Length: 231
Ligand SMILES: Cc1cc2nc3c(=O)[nH]c(=O)nc-3n(C[C@H](O)[C@H](O)[C@H](O)COP(=O)(O)O)c2cc1C
Image (cartoon, rainbow, N blue to C red; front, side):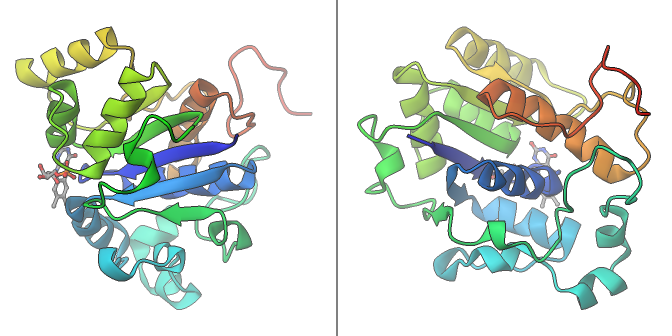
């Protein structure tokens, strides 16, 4: 079994999700991907990507070289190329983005991931909006993302939630506490700076590395604290 569920929702930070997808697929996992309509808006706003939820193709998550060349937001996300420990770029024309991503429309409750009998290694909601956080914390399975998260909780499987909001209301804090008590891992998109990041890509990799650690996906995306300095 090597199924992982990844849900993208409408919080800022869609670049985290794209990098996560790349790393998980490269690890040999089959990624079951579902995307909320609000995530589509954020992808457009932050990365100039146009995603069609009704006619989805993983290629829609890969900007062309021309787009990268003309979009400063995309350029900033490229690895510096000399950081020594970064893997490939989020935005490489990478074969890994095809083939091992199984897409599920966010309204398709007949999808396998809506059922506990469909075996997975876990699920990540990245980035996770306060709206989705609230729905999952309160058991409101109004779309496939909420339902799949609910399934992971009831089956006592790994559920990693990557919220992005600041400051946090008492309601959001309560929802996080509730989810943590129900067994989820709350992993805020809150990168550290102790690995001497050189680029935005390094900050993204910090969060993706911590998500992968939670899922048991081996990675060397960042210099770990206590590891030997590079020669
Ligand atoms: C560009 C953009 C950025 C947003 N950033 C955040 C955010 O960082 N955190 C958050 O909780 N909501 C954010 N929102 C609002 C959510 O997208 C909105 O609450 C939406 O209803 C969430 O729906 P979903 O949980 O189904 O994806 C953002 C919206 C847009 C358009």
